[in-house]
View 1 (cartoon, protein in one colour):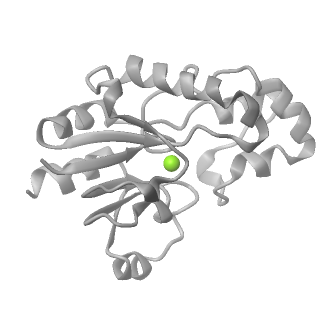
View 2 (cartoon, protein in one colour):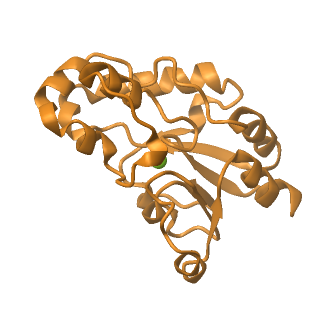
Length: 187
Ligand SMILES: [Mg+2]
């Protein structure tokens, strides 16, 4: 059975950061209008300290929906592949209470994707340490080493040109339906 690494943030869910930024700064914005990967840092720079103090004990996954199709497609993938969810949980700004974030991620995954056992969660900041046949992530750097590399489209990676992806043997997937097509329909 081939192994798959599935990233969590911006692949399984976008989390609640956007909501908290909007609440704290009393603004409204769309992720699609952004270009920077580090949008949280960008959008909170007017009052970094105040913002992190505001979210310090909040759950970054409260009321965060799964991205469209994630539940159904992951369930199907699990029948054919050995699926792992690999995610970082450290935020430099709240590193001393990162255990809370790990816990929130753990319970979010259990609640939202109950068919994936906790044994299949890997919490790490260094995905390079691991080997997988297939990797799905919104960051190119996290796709290294896999035979099948799927870049999940997010606001921060839309401008990466197709030829660059081709050179690196990376296939872009815009949503979970695309993942289904690549990993289930063509094999
Ligand atoms: Mg991610």
